[in-house]
Length: 176
Image (cartoon, rainbow, N blue to C red):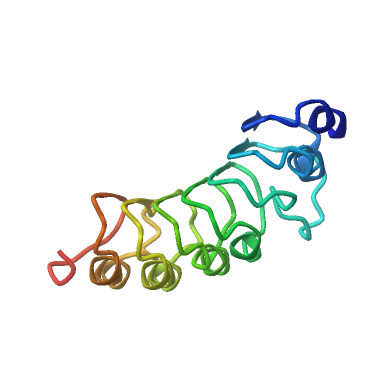
C-alpha cells in the first residue's frame, strides 16, 4: 500500500472495501497523498491494535466515511479539524468518538447510522460545537439512546440545519 501512495501522489479520493491490509495499509497511502480529499473505508479485515486511527497521515481530508469497522475516533478532531462531511455506519463508536468529532468545527454533514453506543450526550456535544452543521442523519437503531435531549440540542445550536433525517429515534411532543 505504501507503493500505491508513492506512485499516486495526486490521489484525491480513496475508497476501500473488504480489504485485508487494515488501518496500517490505509495510512500508508494517505500519509503519502497529501492532497487526499475523500476517504471511504468499509469492512477492513486487517489486524488492528486500537491505537491507530484511520487516516492519521493526512490533514486535507474533508469527506470521511467509515462503515462496518471497529475504530477509535477520539483523536479524529485533532487530526482532521477541517472535516466537513462524516459518515459513520455500523461501527463501534461511542460518545467518546463523537467527542472527537465535536472538535471538527467546520462539520457540515454528519451521518450516524446504526452506531448503537451513541447517545444524547455525544449528539449534544456535536450540536454545541459543530454549529455549521447543515445535514444530520441519525439512525438510532431503536436503541433508545438518542431522543428528545439530543434533538432539542440540535435545534437549539445548529441554526444552519437544512436537512434532518431521524430513523429509530424515540421522540416525544416536547422535542417535536
